[in-house]
Image (cartoon, rainbow, N blue to C red; front, side, top):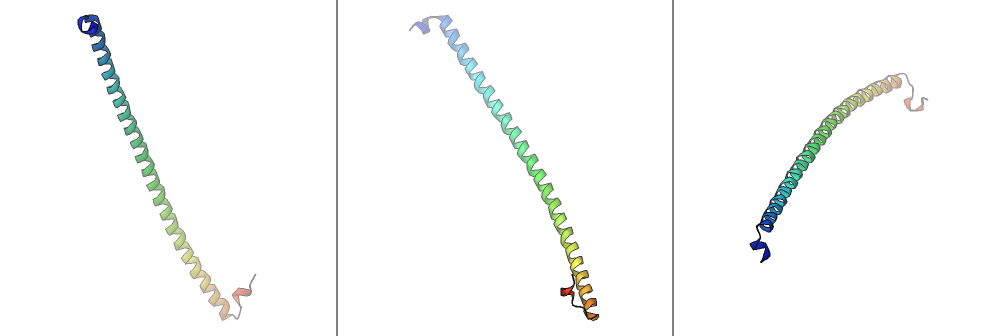
Amino acid sequence: MIAKNNTDFQEAITTTYQLSQEEKIRMQCEAREDYYRRTRGRERLLQETILENAKLISEKERLSSQNEQLSSQNELLRKKLAELGIDADNIE
């Protein structure tokens, strides 16, 4: 074969192979970096979501407590109105 007997062809084949292998390694490194970048982004988004969820739970608990207090106050007012003989449902 011509390629086996010609050192220039052999050198070109070897160089092409090495460059091809370097390109594969470069692509693997880029893929790995892309994976890490995406993973960090997902982890950051997850942490932000967890923090927002905790804030919402806290706000829900605060509003629930406030609602209970208002319901209690409303019940007390209804009782006082009833003691005075006033029907709270007919008040505008």
